[in-house]
Length: 194
Image (cartoon, one colour):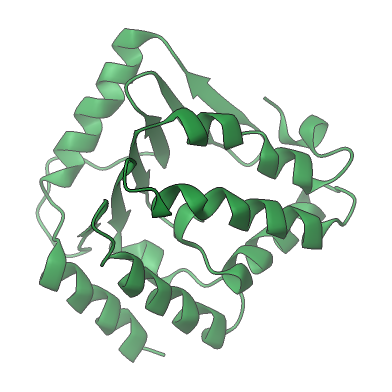
């Protein structure tokens, strides 16, 4: 699904498109290599990111409405029936969107979200032996669909055998991740750099 076509009337439509999928998904598995996932973004971090995409896609500037819709999507992480398993490359903690203050706020938010009982966050350290490298970020919704984003489009994978391969890749990547105190230490290390 081409982003430019979806954003002709503004970014709000693009931000609203996945809401039904989010609402029906019970188990999210998210791998991100260079950014904090939208489900955990602060408004300032999301605004910095969306501002770039509005300009890049030459979309009408509806930042306020798009941001409101993006933040509304986060309500799923507050539902105890939802399970959210996230793998982040350590690099994602150090990729800036906005000012240093925005990044500090985002890392603080990530520490807070780690305390949610239905959320699991693993961070893959940069200096660690591993079996695999994910070539792109991807989101697995239950075991039915995988979504990936390129600079120009969103790709949805629905063939069961391909979805199973993404689940397998997620499991392989998870082997290199640290959780709990180890993950918090990596976030605090990134915070200290600011």
